[in-house]
Amino acid sequence: MAGAGVYSHALVRGIPESLAAGALRREGSGEGSDVNTASAREEHRLYVQALRDRSLVVTELPADEAYPDCVFVEDTAVVCGGTALIARPGAPSRRGEVTAIKKVLSDLGLNIVEMTDETAALDGGDILFTGKEFFVGLSARTNQRGAEILADVFKDYAVSKVSVSGALHLKSFCTMAGPELIAIGSSDQAQKTLMNMQEMSEHRYEKLTLPDDEAANCVYLNIPNKGHVLLHRTAEEFPDSAKEFGKLKDYLLIPVRNTELAKVDGGLTCCSILFNKTV
Ligand code: CIR
Image 1: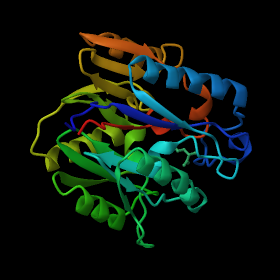
Image 2: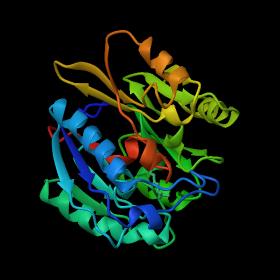
Image 3: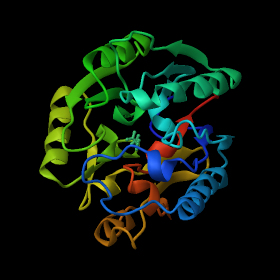
């Protein structure tokens, strides 16, 4: 089953020393604030622990100093229904990250499809799978060709393209928060993007509007016999958004701090590739 949040496995990767000085940052992002590597690793450890505590089988790849952004594994592959599409990240400095990811996903028994077309670009952070269809953000990192290849690989699902500006990725402000529930930031850009998505879709989704765009990047897990689980940013970081999460009924809410990786544009979804291997 490939529904929203239905996962058995997670792939994560450690944080290299090189992240603080070498990770990519959008202009103006985390300005003047250095990443504290020790704090980043502690926050990341708690994130990984939260996934393990929900019974996911977690594979942890070691960091690679040659790739300062390697902790952001989400961008390197899209996994659905037993197939892993190995991405061609939009940032040239990140392309080599995929080699280790391809190997581990292959060792885990997934069918591997590689995006080899040199005109294609795709970051997993631009791919929103709702359980029913895919939305692909066309951003500075993901282009039309990347979206076409994804549509070709995951033929069982409708794939709609939506343009993204003012944020790094589509999922920087828009993720699933439940089987039919989309978490969305309240900026004009975020609301407009969701409106465009709804216009293209045959499905009707509920929306959970968060006052902070960044807080709309959350991790929804739908684990058999464990119900709805949501990893979301803490009240300390985003008090108003945390109040909105608190109104969700029948959820296990797990606040996860992400102050350090956020300085280099990393959100909660970026730090894992989540997939279901029971298909
Ligand atoms: C980058 O610019 O590629 C990294 N510094 C942040 C990537 C965040 N990934 C994601 O949102 N999926």
